[in-house]
Every structure is written in structure tokens, then in C-alpha cells.
Length: 93
Image (tube, helix red, strand yellow):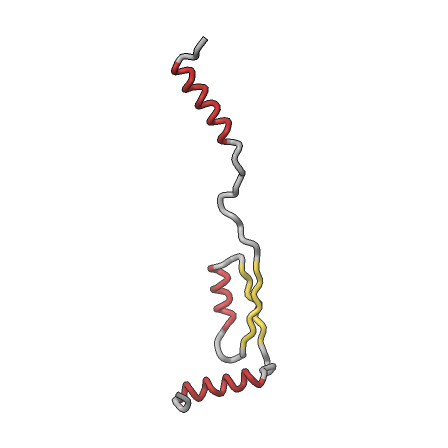
């Protein structure tokens, strides 16, 4: 005995609703993993702690670990700093 047209529609809807639950369960918004960044800086140039705090407010999953250099500067870094000072003073163009 053939099915009536409304019955075919109802059975089709039931089958589609059952199949819609078979898909993969994907989280709506993935939670990023916490990250720690180590940032080495020279003291007495800029207040890096306030910058790190502001960055943490904008990115709560990122922690900035500030590492002061305290005189542990390489020869290359000293040369670069000297060149930057000379460039700022207009000596080196």
C-alpha cells in the first residue's frame, strides 16, 4: 500500500532530524591555552610593568614575564645602543 504524500513528508522530516544529531560535536568558541612570554628589557628606559599589565588585560590568556637585564648586555647590544644614540642625536645618518 503506497504512502500518502503528507506521510512521506513527515517521515522525511523525522529521518532528517535524526541524522542531524550524527554530526561531529565542535565547541562553539575554543578556549586558547595559557601562554607565558619572557621579555628581557633594559632598566630605566620605559615602565614595562604597566605595559605588561595593559597587554594582559587585553589578552587574559597571555602572561608577560619581565626579565631585567641589569648590566648583562652583550657587545653587539652595546654597539647597537651606541648607534641608536648617535642616530637620535643626528650624528649618524
